[in-house]
Image 1 (cartoon, rainbow, N blue to C red):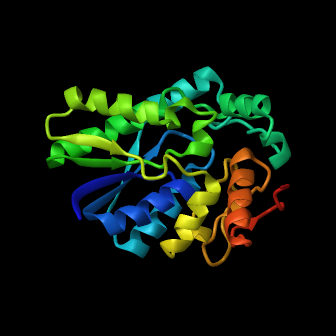
Image 2 (cartoon, rainbow, N blue to C red):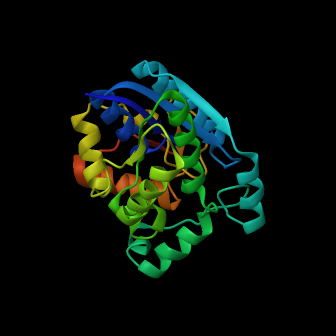
Length: 240
């Protein structure tokens, strides 16, 4: 067991897998959720509160108003816009996938989030920042790659005095592999939210996914390929 970790928790499959993984591998865990005006922010916060209680892990929610301002300045659809609707077949086209990624890109988000987590850990005496970067999203998002993690850790060698580093347990996995890990960890993934434009919650607290955005399609495809079922609630069944 390692001593301490801050899990960057955005509410989706990836960060949920990281949370359950960290619960097994660290003595002390803190969930850190960062608000920046995204379309799914209220849903993310409620999901974070659910898993905080479910796993008995303390939760900190931090607001970065400037990131919302800069996202609107850039025109990202993830903050106050309508995110693209895609099918799994379209995601297989790298040009489409890259255009979708550009549409939802929040300016330097992962740099900002890692910096916040590093500041918290530096204050507490050091530890690991556990992130949900993975191979599938690394194909279109440069800040989800092993190279990004390596460079981030080089920065932290100089930027934190207490010994802080980024750990990415999913870095070699696609969504199918992440779904298998969630099953192994007995995670209640149906209470997580991957959707860019969620439709609220069911009576028993499960997020209602739109089923049409890129993130919903990737989620559904990975779960079906790995487990042959998907307990997620969708407003519209994703096209795979």
